[in-house]
Length: 446
Image (cartoon, rainbow, N blue to C red):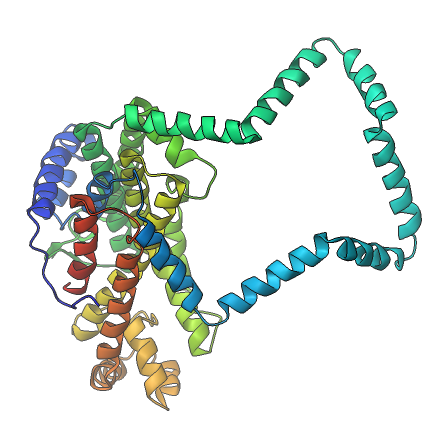
């Protein structure tokens, strides 16, 4: 179990922070219209957590995700109540449906529906005729009448057959492995990927301060407060555009990484950057769920969108730079989501304990509030009736803190951080792996 509050002592993290700040100053110092705004933003840098995720993921060893890690992941899945029964039921249904008896039953069910027999029979006859020798000859004759069809079809068929044969699969895997082994991403390009993620993060903060009406950011006036909302909005848009341009430059120089993060297996995070705004919108709308379980699901949805989007983006591009396969990238996505929820819970705890916290005033159902709602019989009624009166909010804040809800929230954050660390189990022990695991403890120390 991770120890809440364990500090990060890694020189790696500090090295990344310094390198990213220097490179951002170089990149954004050339952006004329907003040079002064960017200089002000960079004068109060954060910890560069997202940059750390990018660089650490790029230092993973994707060569052989360990058998022990895979066994642990499988064991965790088997431990979840109902998993074995549900999987078994689905497998049995699948097997039965495809057995001869299953086909006969499916046919009987279809025959009972009016008109099905005639339609099914007509379709079956057409299908059988098409696939009979005579049907194939006719189809071949039709195709041969079209110029170039025979050659193209043959080439496509041969490629398809080769790709799906055992030998073809081996060749495909060998080509991918060979490309990964022969290709490496320079440290300079990894640093630029990290900077691009941080630029998107800084742009999102400029817009957050506008949406939330925040006057303070990192101990000083927000850009919206010091320069006006119009300037802050334009600077945010400009910085986001500069980040996307930087992504395009790096991926253009590294086609292997571009292919990895663009592959159709659900790990391309760049096209989901808009979920940053989606999370903010969902959070600002009163949840439709009224039960505690539904409110918890809504919370996770918001956290994974608001915070997890850039965590996944960082891990996906760093992992692709390391040469991770799709299973490795999916493991990193799970790590990012759990870490994001832990991060958001700790942020909520800080807000509810601060007299200047804004979440209660915005009537946002944070994780400590959820724990309070679950532990106090009359809490739901108080929450509904709170309104915006300062006296009511102060009373609720005191009750949330005094109810033990904060301690329960810390336990929930530690549980999420532990799940994030466990998602890394399949990766060999490297500096990158250790830093990603260390970040799980560092998040709990916020």
